[in-house]
Length: 266
Image 1 (cartoon, rainbow, N blue to C red):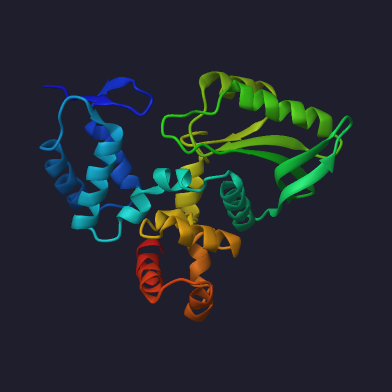
Image 2 (cartoon, rainbow, N blue to C red):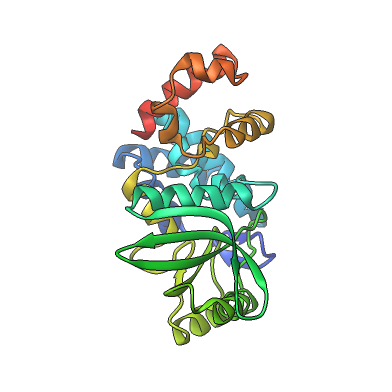
């Protein structure tokens, strides 16, 4: 019997064991653990179960069988927690690109041919300068659409004297039309599952550049406090001593949890 799953978009699709297996593998789960998680999960499924509930079940089971590995599995949700505004996502993208060898600035005002523009991220590398539009979504199932690519290109047209190429970076998927338009305009697109090589999750996982929101035990207040003090990546904590974290207002319990979590993300 095929179990029907309800996606965040409201669409119904058949449950795919292969998708769950693949996501666990990407998160670093051991083969034995993947089999254990799936064996437990199958018994909990029912028609109409949501993808959100499946994710929660898998997250809990993964942490049960391979302690701490859930921090990696929570990446997609963690990117959506980089809010409530889009600014933390912009800071995250800037930090990610810095680790990849770019020089970056955020929220830069640039004068175009017609008007002034506030650019989310300006990135420079090899004497090339890139205008980066960061499209942040906090709802599962939401995609960045062709209008976002059109908007990015329109801004670039007014700023073409200042930049080499426009980029559109989003924490969710892109629609087919957004990809088609971006490719036609020679726009660099980075999104969840796009491109096939160099997608957002691949850049994060390959370079171990997880956002601090992967640390699911941090509450909203703690996250905002850390953003304000320039801490956006889990890696940032490795370079920040306990005294500094304590002075920011983090409890000794939170600091201890952070240190323990970093062992699973290193």
